[in-house]
Image (tube, rainbow, N blue to C red):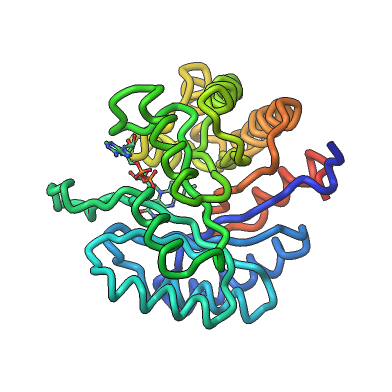
Length: 279
Ligand code: FAD
């Protein structure tokens, strides 16, 4: 595979303030020079960031970039979701990351969550093939899944409902991805599944985040990060080394692209892309 043509995509969260929005636009300019296939903007639990996500999406589009809003039913009814999707369609958006999402903290009624498969089917029913639909995949298996194979089969259900490609939760064990891709293929999944990459810049944040979303930080990595937690420069350098090695292995395994969780910062992702010789 020609490294220069590997698909890159960059994920942001929607800023809450005008200052954050301005900072994000600088990040978009910097990462835009790496020729990503698209940017994406996350969607808060329960639809809590609906307008912030939409504003960030439209601002990135105004800069001439392809951009994919993340979307889930959250607490919204079908009409609210339809209106938002129509707005995206009319704004020239061609890609959506379709999710179940989680409930806002404090809400425990998981029966209100709509599976991503149903959102995919809903979008296909109302918008035909207009949108390229991305769905989430979990090489280390989603925390609510009843089992490994069950989770892979639910992923297959999302593709059968009309999703075009997958993006994974981040992980630091390349072999988990290798196993997962092999199992997906055995279960009849033919669509590309792009690994999600989380740069390592802050040990405490990474640990907290990972505990919340079920991403595994291997014991050896946890200990090394613990050793380096008071030396930000050394931690950053070590993070680049570990994540570069991970990406090298993923490329070797035939990963169809890399999706970076940028945390709205340009520098960590740019360093990795350059270290890998991808642009
Ligand atoms: P689903 O695919 O619906 O699966 C959810 C769980 O239900 C899984 O455990 C699955 O095994 C199980 N399941 C699926 N179908 C069935 C069924 N028929 N019966 C029983 N069990 C079933 N979260 C946000 O809040 N905002 C974001 O913007 C966001 N972006 C993300 C982007 C990526 C690339 C990834 C990997 C995750 C993202 N998340 C986001 C997190 C995601 O919303 C959570 O992980 C959520 O808990 C699951 O969403 P899903 O779309 O994977 O759900």
